[in-house]
Image 1 (cartoon, rainbow, N blue to C red):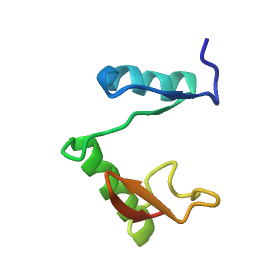
Image 2 (image 1 turned 90 degrees about the horizontal axis):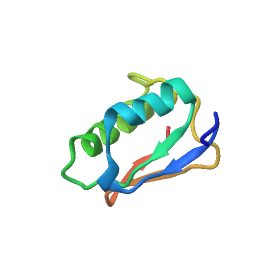
Image 3 (image 1 turned 45 degrees about the vertical axis):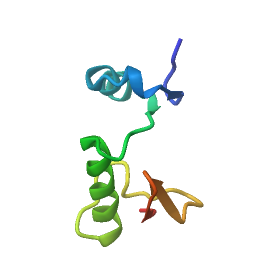
Length: 82
């Protein structure tokens, strides 16, 4: 049973946006899924991280920063932590 605050590590083969959204919004469960470099979600993650660090826009959840984080590695591309 997943509880609020749990972290779920999923295989890329089980990528399902509706389920991930439900887990995050309704159950407060964070989900980590490895992404391929050519996936739209990968490009969006890179853009959101870049926006959060530029000060132009802070997406919800990224504005508070990641304690102890200096850089994110997203498909081999280094992006500064928010």
